[in-house]
Length: 144
Image 1 (cartoon, rainbow, N blue to C red):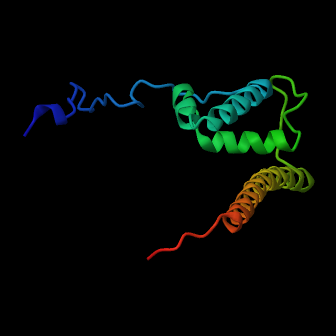
Image 2: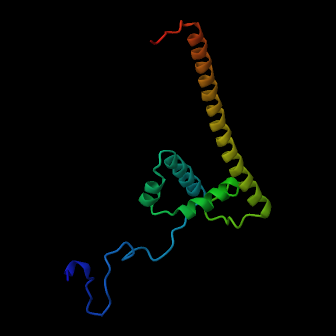
Image 3: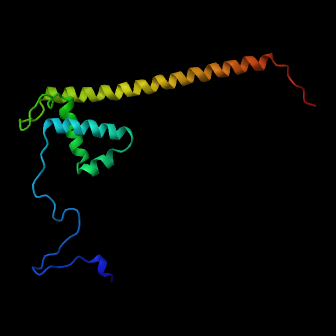
């Protein structure tokens, strides 16, 4: 058995763990509303280049935090808040506004994608029409 796989036991009988939680912070971090807005914006920018996970790992954040902060931002709860000012829970109206804003963003993205696909289809249609017209004007070769 390899001694590298075993954690050493101290004089007090407790095991020491070299893992990420060993000696870590014992209190929770808190963020100002401005910091939350900055982190959400930076995270969304990182997600555009498929670097969202790396962004979170580098800063010790969780995707669940980004989800919650995005909801607060979309509902307008974070805007204009001072550091230490209570944010509170979303009202049902604010939650509905946030949900509708996210739904609108998704719909706009789908619309943009659909428009691009239609543009490609139009170009393909024109290409094939042109190819058919050219083939009708060419003399047909006879195979023997």
